[in-house]
Amino acid sequence: MRQPYEVYRKYQRLLKSELSLEIDRRVKISHINCRYNKSVSLEGQPTIRLCTYGQKVSQSLDVGELLVCNNCKQARECSAYNPLYKSREEASAALSLELKDPAEKNRKFPVLIALEWVMDNTLFELKQNPPTRRHRMLRWVIRKTESLLIRLESWYRSIQ
Image 1 (cartoon, helix red, strand yellow):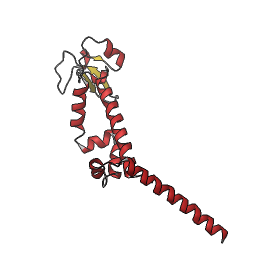
Image 2 (image 1 turned 30 degrees about the horizontal axis):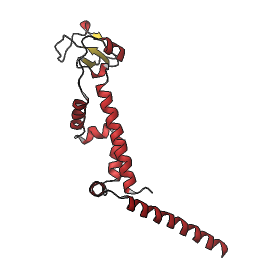
Image 3 (image 1 turned 180 degrees about the vertical axis):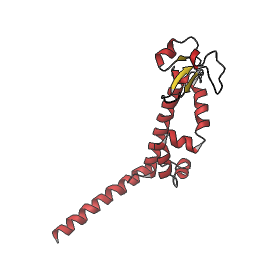
Image 4 (image 1 turned 120 degrees about the vertical axis):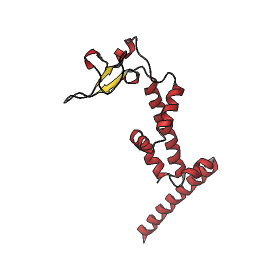
């Protein structure tokens, strides 16, 4: 079984990497990250992404005058491309605001939620007082001693 500090370290690494990947995704030049790109569902058809540049966005769009914009190559070549987030800081602030909602956090990062649930009782303690090298060494010695005692006990039972 993993020690609480090991789970917490894994949580920290995953949190950092997942948030970094999400921020990178948000600042990447992509059709999804354009302010003018909207997802529209037509009757009986799958949703498509349309460029609404120069249109008033309302409930009913005149789809006859809109362009389909559904790949990153189009976004890179588009002169009307306007990113949702101009910097990593903006994307990070928007992401932290979104993650205040537990349902959204659970939808985007279920593994992190699971680790938070596992660490629920020890998370606060670990943040306040992380284990030192001495603590880790002591736990290692205890684990090795336990495994040695288990081997000795099985050996002792086998000779009886």
